[in-house]
Length: 255
Image 1 (spheres, rainbow, N blue to C red):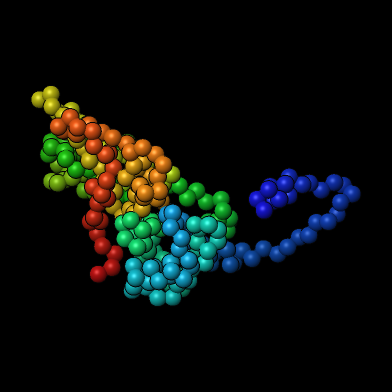
Image 2: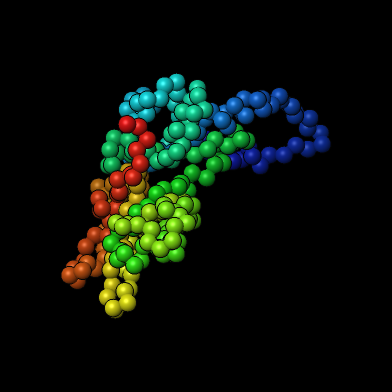
């Protein structure tokens, strides 16, 4: 089918060909969709029927009523809401775990005003990241900016604008993460005494993380890659990715 559509897209009309039809555009419906619908991308190797997805979303969106789910293509869905405040509520956090951390990750994107959902870039999604293991003297906004650049484009920093120390346990910032690439697990940071500390990156509200390659959408049982290793503090080679990459969200949407 894709080959047929690709060939059809290359067709052109000659002067003698008048087989052209003008259709009416329902711009009002497009405007309504842009404010009442979101595009969802499901990252998983598991098979989820639409009815099963509805059951799972009803559990995590238990206070929200009046929404519908329809599959557009493999792994892509349109979710419509009767009330815009409900749409705004679920879009406060753009990623949702289904069936637990090892199940599936649903990433949400704004519905395009053009209606061309198949042209939406579903690779980039904002995610809050925690960086653990840093000495207190490194907990600054300037260092948060440097560390965030290892992941993607910086969108926000917790306690932004405060002078001096910005966190007591970890640095906290929101970045635009590429869902198609391996997550950045961490790095060594040099200290003034010549020593090194490991800055551990932990990602909030993620699921279906592969402990071998560090990408989202499948677990290590499905992965054909060799595990990525890093030398630990005792000189031993250990897996770079594991359950420690996931972090508990600092804020909860539903109580």
